[in-house]
Image (cartoon, rainbow, N blue to C red; front, side, top):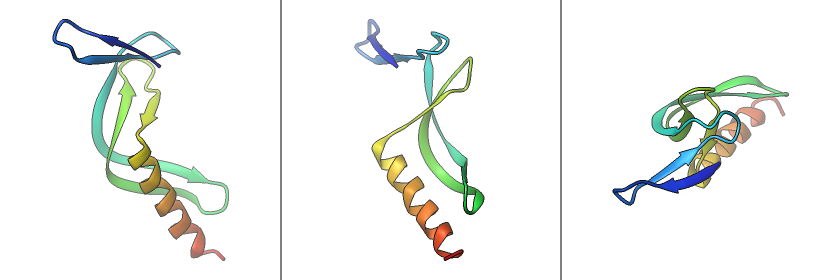
Length: 77
């Protein structure tokens, strides 16, 4: 990810895979764990590339994803 600043002093993040812009989104993320399979985490914030759909997660979003993954894994242990 590369970060640039536009003329309004707003950061624009560029995808290293394709060069397109990332846009901020809020929605449901579907992740996959080798033990429990797919699980959903609703209403989280992330950035997605407009062209190739690569995703970036903030530290807070990663914490929510980890918490849900651990919760799902506890069902199988």
